[in-house]
Image (tube, rainbow, N blue to C red; front, top):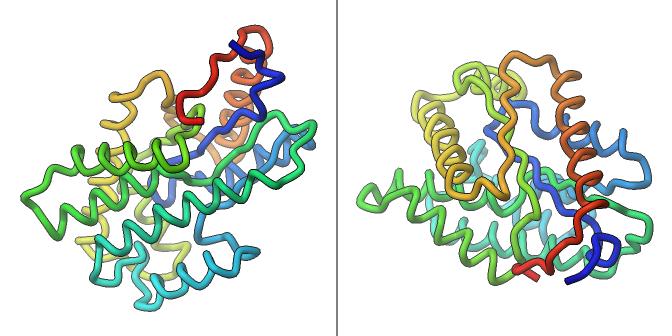
Length: 235
């Protein structure tokens, strides 16, 4: 057994469907943490990683909001590989004094989004089974977050917000995909209640959402200070 001080920074992923306010909450909550927190941007925002940027540019070349190129298996493997790379790049970073790494979308996003996309192409497969398989691979290759904060809201409202943000109307197929992703996230949270913390932000303002995320992370850190941490099985 090792103490939390020896275990390194707590890794917390912030997840949720498009338009739920996840990115803004992760960024602003990290800012409130100051030197104690480090933000790990989602794959589409990894501007300082040339390789990741090129892969994302290739996947987004068709203009699809979900990076669909017509080759869902290849897309899944590419995104999972980039998540492994993102985790590996943390190894050489100077993290002295950092208590928490707050990740804007992690392997849970790859598992849930790609499971929904794959099963829309191959309907014989069960989305829940595919998502669990992707997470099992991620656990072996780069580990899972210590905690995953799942922000939930009304899928219809979130879809409208997402469409407004990208300045395009989403198709009925895209709206259905977001609804399916929302369902899968909730299934994954039920599967792993020790890791997932579900935060219903449907009736909260963006600033209130930031406050809830910041308070939750602060509570996790406070709890970690007083309870010795077991060595993470994903390490």
